[in-house]
Structure formats: structure tokens, C-alpha cells
Length: 205
Image 1 (tube, rainbow, N blue to C red):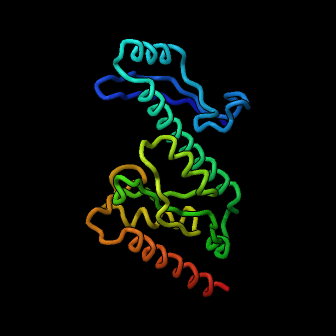
Image 2: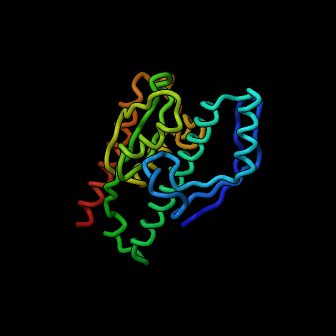
């Protein structure tokens, strides 16, 4: 399902505002299917403006590439999450029986950070962690490292986001700078949630 976005391309003191971008099935040929931004389309006038900035030396081609990869990577992640949530809603019976309410979500919840800033941690969810990290890496100038993962899907991800909400900096990123061991803190919180699930499941069996 294609969607349209209006975004700003930021390059320090230079900004190309209100750029039209689309994401969805059928955008792009198979030749570049393995590239991080496959499935996206950007308006031609914005591309011309971007090339003009490169031509006059205001920005480098590498800066343009990195910003586009970062942007399309973020949009792809958002679209993946929306698609997965849509599937989850379609599969959910209505009204839900209590046992269905406890149905385990076996998707992976993960924590990643960069080598440069290991205390800035992203907590997300994905069916395929390796593919998600690859997608995120395309928009990151530094190497991403998988710090932790566990099965639990959206319920576990939401629980962890709530538990560490005071540490949230933006989106799914959290600041663990004053925490002695971020991975241990995340794992302990996850185990509390998963144990509650086991206990509730046992009570309903």
C-alpha cells in the first residue's frame, strides 16, 4: 500500500523543504531491489535542487546519499511497523476470548546502539532482526551493534517503552548514560513482563 510523505532534507545550514516522497509496492524495478531505499520515489524538482547544492559545493555527494538513506530507512521501518500492526489487527478475533488475549507474539524485540554512543539505545520489534539492522545501518554513519534480543513482539516492546519512558530521547531511542548496564536493565524488565505472561497463561489453562 503506497503512502505519500512530505519531508525536509537537512544538510547543516542548508535545507530543502517540503520534499514530496512516496513509498510503496511497485515503485522501482527489480535491478535495485537489494538497495536500502528500494520502493521509494522522490520528486524530480527536489532532486534537481539537491544536485544544484552539490554542484556549487554547498554539500557533498556523500552527505546527500547519507541523508537520503537515513530518510528512506526511517520511512521503511515505519511502513514495516504499520504493516505488521495491520496484520496483527486482522488476525485478532473480535470480540477476543481471554485465551486469545494472552496469545504469545513471537516476533523479536531488540536493543541496538552504535559503537560511538553505546548508551543511546534503540528498542524496537521485527520479524527479522538481521534485515532490520541492515535497513537501519543504511541510515547510520557509524556501525550499529545488536546488544540484546528476546521474543515477545509488540506487547513486550510497548512494555519496555513504558518502563524506560523517562529515558526516551526521541522515537524508540533511550538514553542509558547513567545506567551501569543497559543490557541487564532491559533484560530484567523484559523477564518481569514475560514471567507475568507465563503466570497469566497458566492461570487460564
